[in-house]
Length: 157
Image (cartoon, rainbow, N blue to C red; front, top):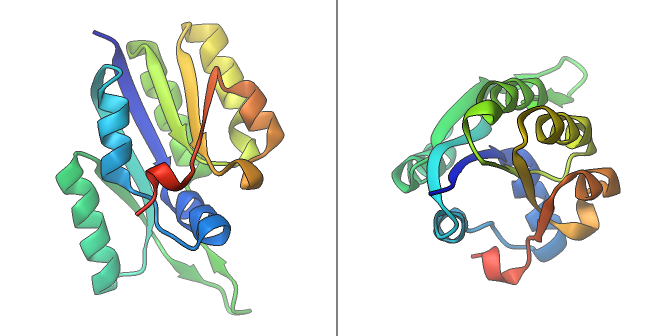
């Protein structure tokens, strides 16, 4: 059976589905779809911790589906802007785990991950799949993926 690892850029998926469709992503439907393709051996969801009840409820829902939720603190800068980026952490985890799975599934539209997908496919002979909102996804990421799954209304709540 094919071994699959899932890596979710929660903020990217939240904001792109909200902007494109005004709706939330359905992680349970994603899990059902991916698990029909093989065994999910790792599933990480990367989020920013604002320490509010609504967010904690969402994080617990992800855990109940089967995700490990990795949190970084929300940082409010003095100029009012915010910082909370998991790109390096996601990249490290993908590099650490790509050699032990058959498929890496990334949920993000961030073009910064294109080189990473190229590298793991070349070095580890792994299949890299991306789920993202097409209109808000870097073309370079779509090209780097062996398979691009468009997030549309079928994967929304």
